[in-house]
Image 1 (spheres, rainbow, N blue to C red):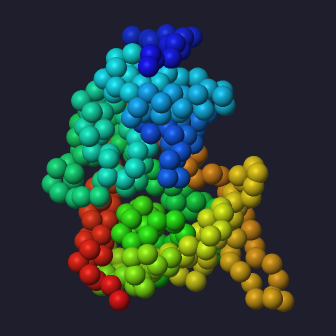
Image 2: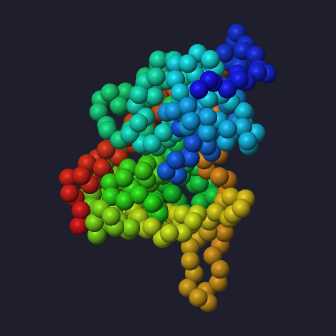
Length: 340
């Protein structure tokens, strides 16, 4: 199938710092609740030029292109990465493919000096080569960011609970409601609590006393407990999976006894956080409005790319490598049978 007509209306400056950011997306169709279509729209809304989408077949690539064009986001459709890069000359790449498929695209991005926003988890296997990825991107002056949105909710949490001293908490819990089961649910979700923990307790960390509890790999509910140990802090953690069948899927987290429950109101997809359920007769939950955390993360990515384009430098994101190591430790514990 031939590529769509090339988008026109922009000029490439000889100075990279003056160029409009041009972004391609791999995985721009919404398959298995993927974030690709949203990320494609959000990078364009953040001021970048969406120039290409890559699909595995001509049909899937064209379906992604057509859906974006219908919403006012014209771009080209490709099935060849090399052709897409040559034709569109992108500045950055959004990798929105399923977990376990990211590594080849990350290597391709490095070969072509592209900034990358990658869906979480960045990788599911941790080794010395994986640990070097942030430094390799930094050496090229390129931004590497993972789509971990939950730290972007901490401003709303602070507005909801101004008396919570997040840098002194000793307990953390999170509830999520993924549709996945068994190991897949942990692969898809553990970057969320880990990124929150890294934000409230920064620096190198280990996970200890890891225990999973589930009735079986197909059980809708499951629980994980562990200690998050930094150089000077120990935080007892519990992650609960509760597939309630509700939509939008419920989610909440708590720092010590301070609870923030996500509320998404349709049809405008407005975000709020409240402080949890109240027993009957004890009044209504307090609520604060919040920005869409993925939009905030995309805007942060675009700003980081603009800064790197201007300065020619991008600091290595050490938290990414640390998070992959922690994730691999937790997944290994699950696979080794650390379950009750």
